[in-house]
Length: 151
Image 1 (cartoon, rainbow, N blue to C red):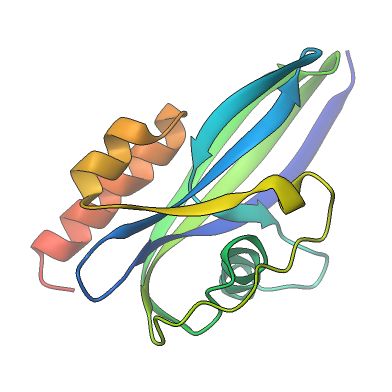
Image 2 (image 1 turned 90 degrees about the vertical axis):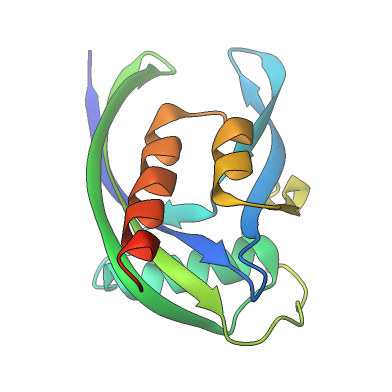
């Protein structure tokens, strides 16, 4: 089985009321459309800094482009099988705050991204309950710890 390795970056994005930005999307998995709730994230381009990629991806997927990075939430290694290949992915997230709460238009770069819908969860706990994947719930927990320490 071939192995694909890549790195991603994204954001746990809070507004002034501490609501959490989520992305709802319908994607094809194994020939079926599946509904997912995710944190905004995407591939780090060659030569791009992870923090820059995180801000770019949040902007492309949600339209919220004026962001302040509050803290680096670290990296998780994630591996899974997809389309007959083993995928090994480094996921890095940043805790971010909106510097401007006026959304622009999302800037999708693929047909799949054009189906993404920005949504808000009232709290970090409610966001964790809605997220599809455990790895993203872990970044919510990390954001909670940072905020408890006063960031």
